[in-house]
Length: 148
Image (tube, rainbow, N blue to C red; front, side, top):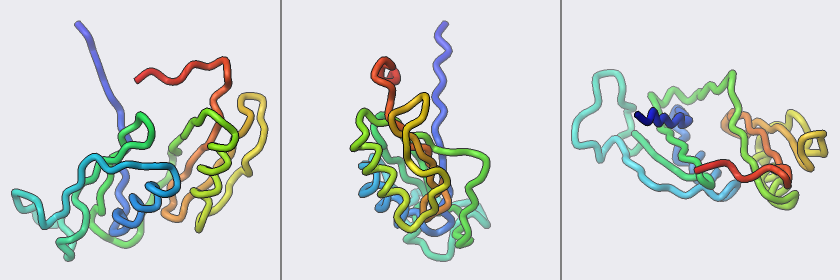
């Protein structure tokens, strides 16, 4: 019996989801696979779960490389809180790492500048403009790509 599990990040941007997805599209090449606004839902959301603005995003799935990230506007409190985790992005080249890191840092906060470490030709940590912590690294050449 195969016990196949998938763990995927689900981010609640509290009213800034559309802006975040567009930012990730430019910063790290995210591609939207599915999107639904509250106004497009076939059923009304449970009481207290929908924002005042029906054009806000109820659910979106986007790809960054081989990874699916899911997100929504949540309850649109205007104050997303991301703590206790990071999204790690591994790229093949130093140029790709430089591009991703600099793009994610735009409007954000560099926590650890991108540089050489014992485990990567380039590694750095940045909190993007939405408060999501990212770790950007170049995969070691002797390390195969992650399985799909």
